[in-house]
Image (tube, rainbow, N blue to C red; front, side, top):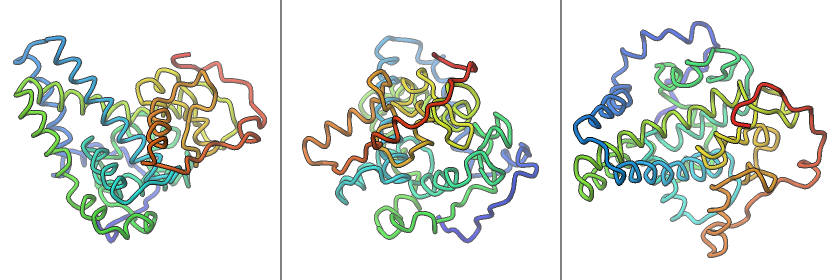
Length: 295
């Protein structure tokens, strides 16, 4: 995606929902949701539910280990080949291009919960921070100057430009193996769940949950979202020390993505996993908020 059309506007009237339905780029997103109604045609079988759950968690790891912890924060290192595979897997989530995702996320951390933050629920309200901003014409493009480190790779730039290829091939593979019921449950229902659980990190974890550290924004920790999002629910930890590969810092803070990355490091597929220093974990802990979710 080109950065030419990027417009870092302030929050003025960002919740003009009518523009959402005037953007051709939003048709695939809306179609994925509508196709979930196909479940009325397939009926329910336990194997379809298991397929949906498996497809969801496979790609959630792609989003968390790829889009987020690697491309946005560079919290570990890997080879150029595995870097490409990470980008491809993450993009089967249909959350646009890898550079688009990382650029917007880096911008979010630079201005977290301040006026410039694209998806702060404290600035723009829950619904716009949850999903509206991704559908807004203002944010269809990304400021690629924020991701020069990865934009230099032609194969990554290719994926970012043709971001529809990974989810299309993934959906086709699902269909070839499991047929129409598999496509509905393993792709459309799974992708819809993947959308909104990912978006909950932008919205809910800046509104409800427990506060451990003074991170300078509204970020909070949530056990439920940590389970649903493979460790991403420990959001207050993450905002306090963004470059850590693990977001669950204590033994009881479940972080499936981190466990997978540790196993991959045993085989030399990834390396230099950046853990939070001891003094960061042990720094002044504030009284936990009584406004909690899943605790």
